[in-house]
Image 1 (cartoon, rainbow, N blue to C red):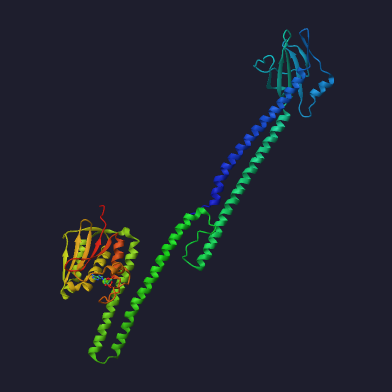
Image 2: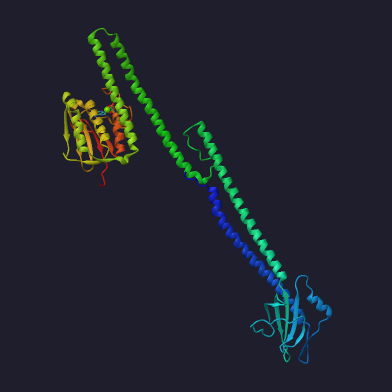
Length: 462
Ligand SMILES: Nc1ncnc2c1ncn2[C@@H]1O[C@H](COP(=O)(O)OP(=O)(O)O)[C@@H](O)[C@H]1O
Ligand SMILES: [Mg+2]
């Protein structure tokens, strides 16, 4: 089974990795900045210490000396954490003052009157140094060097490092939790909407989902689609129910008639009347059979509509001639001239031969029923401008006012002769729709009226 993906989990996974990277980046930036500022502050202290020594340098006859009391010396060296070293030396390499020998700046010429920071080690311990060069015209140049071990710097940088790592982790965790919680809240609103819909549908199935409650906007398109589906379903459902009711009604009447006639036949002693009652019953039965057949055809057309890709190439010219053949005896018996009009060669459309035959049969049946008075019926086929099959009679035609109604299921023009049930044209219409064809009911004009029922197919691309 395919496991369903969770929006919450997906969001979390997609957010957490970038969030972690971002907080790590921010953490390192904060660390670097803190490092930079603490370094510059500590360097400034170092420089200030050097300057306090520089201020003590005196010159007598071009010879430098430092005037530093014992007390001042101990203040200079005093530091609870680090060791402070200093040295004052002339350019002639004479040490004037110092508590150690300090390394000179490497390979960098310290210009007179400037200072420089550098790193080295004293007694095996890394130190940070500043060297200040002072020169007097006509006097020897003096270099003041102050060094400090780096313990304070190290402690500080460790503290800053841990702090920024802790802060980053805290930030990442908090963001992940907020995301989880926030998305959860969003989904909770969806769940309450689902609950609403469930209670609504428990009360009234097939009602559209109201779009006004606190539905998240993101699911609106989905809900709209579902509502369309519900609408289609309820329409189909309503049509089906009406159809079943109509069909039941159509069959109930002949069934009742059948029962009366059979009861009559049972009681009838007179052979002739007995036979007539039985004949009537058989007549009703065959009518019922016809209605049932039509209902089934309609159901089949509906069902096949769903699998219209099962279409094949069908020769409508052959269908026309087959249907004429089938009803020729009836036509002759009724004194009707039933003829064919067409190219006498195959006219191909894409479709279902059985359904198309059924459609033509229904049109021909109508022509024989309602247009018989004209004594002429033609079943015709055309290949241009579009494939077409038609049935034409010289009967009364269909009044304009009835044109649209006659296609409705179970509709018959009031006082129509015969015992149809009003399904014929709706079957033809359904089959036409199934073939993307159009049913045109055209009243002949001119000297003799009549109906030409045309089934016009789409021009195939092939
Ligand atoms: N060729 C025709 N000429 C005149 N009226 C027709 C013709 N075909 C159909 N009609 C009218 O249309 C109505 C509907 O036809 P149809 O759907 O086939 O149902 P049914 O034939 O069972 O009455 C018929 O009752 C009839 O009045
Ligand atoms: Mg009919």
